[in-house]
Image 1 (cartoon, helix red, strand yellow):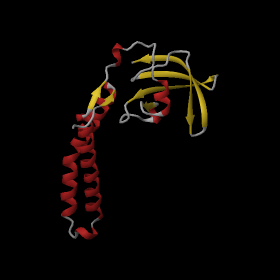
Image 2: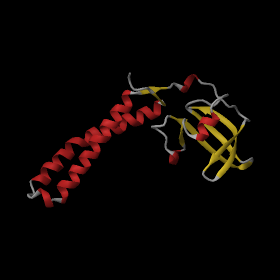
Image 3: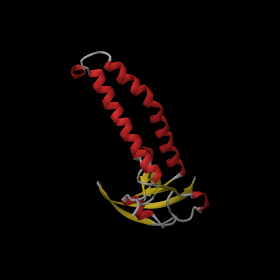
Image 4: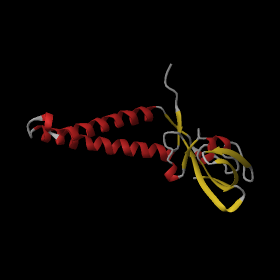
Length: 159
């Protein structure tokens, strides 16, 4: 009974791999920082030592997390998808509440690459899961923290 695979975009996979590479490059400098701090004497009152150990612990934990996620990632190739139906990896332009002046654009990604500040929403989010299988011109109703919103699909693109 293995761990299930989770979907990820090619770009999301590259970002994870890049972060993992950067963290692994940081390892030697953290080990040196801990050794240098240890050389300063009494460890119980050595703030540099404790800060370096804490950072090393974070880095090791993040490396383990990323390695686990990468081992269970399944890249979904969106290049073969047509832009007529919303699916994983789609970049969707939406008109909000029927107001042509209120538009937003989101890309539907796996839950481990979602980042609302970059307009990347998880396929498991209420908005994305409601949009899946819809086409241009369809309107969906989604319950948001600010109440119900209507979203009309303006365009669908796969990059």
